[in-house]
Amino acid sequence: MASAAAQTPHRGLPPLTRDPAQAARDIREYGICLVDGVLTGDTLKRARDALYRAAEEDRARNRERKFSLDYGHDESNQRVWNVLSRDPVFEDLVTHPLAMELVRSVVGWPCLLGNISANITGPGGGEMVLHADQIFVPEPWPAEPQGVNVVWCLDDFTEANGATRFVPGSHTLHRPPRPDEAEVETIPIEAPAGAIAVFESRVWHKTGFNRTADERRAGVFAWYTKPIYRQQENWFLSLQPSVRQFASEELLVLLGYKTEGLGLVNGASPA
Ligand SMILES: O=C(O)CCC(=O)C(=O)O
Image (cartoon, rainbow, N blue to C red; front, top):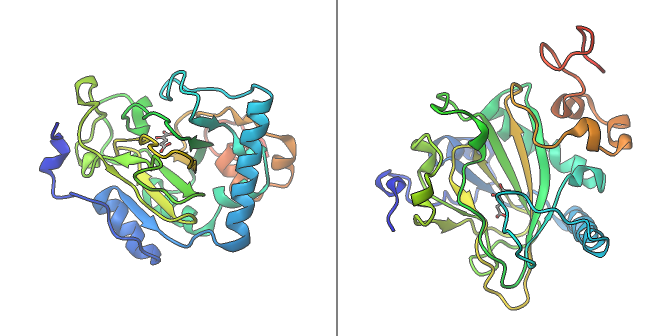
């Protein structure tokens, strides 16, 4: 089925870049950018090992939780929530200077970290429902995107292993997909391990099918919003306390522990 977005001039993915200014331009034009080589060597290995360790622990303890937009009773794909509480390496991802520069270019500063969770596709794993991340924003949507998602590719993202798929140009439609648009044409966000894809919150996207016999695809999704939105993860209840204890000023703001105007305690910032 052809999509309404196919009528727009944005027919594909922008090329991989290492230039932050180009990446910010790509988000404005295409709704998405791809930056490669953001995590390399030991750092990439640390993040990947930490995520797969957390996933194994959740499976072993039967602690895996699906989300309403996830894959129902699909046993191949696995969601790992709140990775920030699982290993300090994820603090480095949340506040990575390049990621933060791109996040600020979309939603400004201060902003909030809505959540940071991982999706691991597994052999035979199914697709997620097509959605835009600012699904919680009432329509008509404000003129600017209200959030931005930074996707950390901890494995190669390929069409075969379930790379996230998106609808080119969908950010210009300025609305979420309707139920009869669930099957519109999408293209895979293919990128090497260590790359990030950053897309603004109006982009229609979903997890792809994993058609491989033996490959998993780990992606960490860090979701940031303008500071007027409730965070998806309730950090005040679920954050591992030592994260707050050692957090930078920037991370305290992102988590909502240091704030202005909203989220006060007796009229003042809690931290
Ligand atoms: O797993 C993916 O590729 C997409 C995940 C996603 O869209 C989400 O978590 O909102």
